[in-house]
Length: 147
Image 1 (cartoon, rainbow, N blue to C red):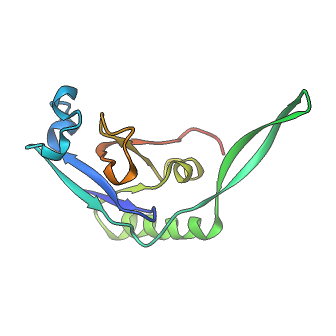
Image 2: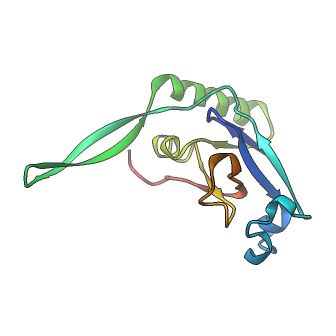
């Protein structure tokens, strides 16, 4: 069993589709038609009440022609780190479920392997946020990326 846990401050509209998960749904079938999909179900993943946040940290890469070229990294906020640990402990030790903790791309970078970003259903990449539809079988991770 997979539990999707939303650690953003807004709901996430997700397509739960068996055909999409197994790869049996060709792109032409679900391109902008998932709202009418006969195989899947669209659900709203409500915010969990915990909004995992991060802080931006700049690192100087080099100076060139009077310009500062910096790299940005996102680092965990202590309170969010504790709240995330509480969620993880609840699932890993108290429930027999696999949690997929969904956050922003920034949170996914700050908490690699712990928080995941969403991947839009093809055809829903460039739509307004209230029309966004994301997959339930594919997520963005920054595992292996050093902080």
